[in-house]
Length: 99
Image (cartoon, rainbow, N blue to C red; front, side):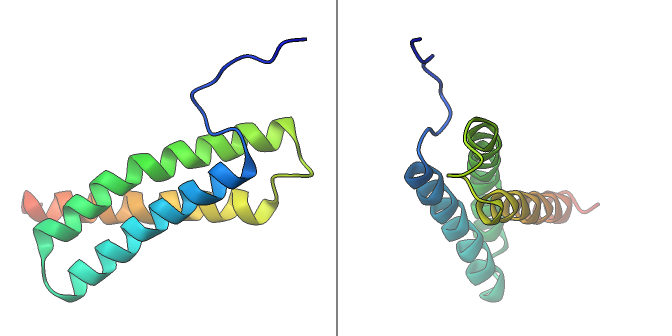
């Protein structure tokens, strides 16, 4: 049986690298927030959130295919990172619009 091509990340190595990229976005958000660079912090979170969400969806799909290779640590970690970045992006947008 031929495996279908997918836009999602396929290997555990790719998933780990995706989590690292999203994590760097979160670190950039935190650093920019500490330096009171509101616009930069907001942009970092807004750009990083779709990446984290994409990685999380890839990890969920990978976990369904191979429960042995894709660990719960990767699953829960990528989900938590996506939720954190969503919150950061929401707070940034809220501050920009003065809500």
